[in-house]
Length: 191
Image (cartoon, rainbow, N blue to C red; front, side, top):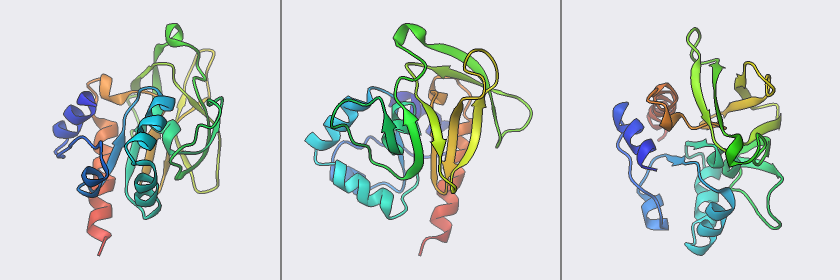
């Protein structure tokens, strides 16, 4: 979470931790960080955040999920633990730990459509990938080379953005800047 907060601050946004429903009520948008998606799900239930999160996302709150955050935003999950549910919102099917175990973590350049020209150097840690997308989902990034070439690793649907990688670990704030800009546009249009 610290790395996301630093990246948000670097692009001019004020971030705060959200661990309780009252803290969720105080924010305009949400970043769901990487980590372990089953633990995140269990903590959301234990802290009575699952329903409030779903309600806010359903009402149109902007959100960005990286790695496990992508899993949490997916409508459909493959290879989850028995009974694991997600927050939903993104019309995607995501495969948990698709690139392998922790020892299979890697870095790769990813061409991201919103940033033509220079590729984004992405860090993948026990990362998911997107198996399929719905009609309203825009694929904005794919792995460019290697055994995973062509795999979908970044998507956007309205005010929801998700990456299978960890942009907060790279020092490249372009993804966070893209998200913050979408939040600002959303806030301008909101009554």
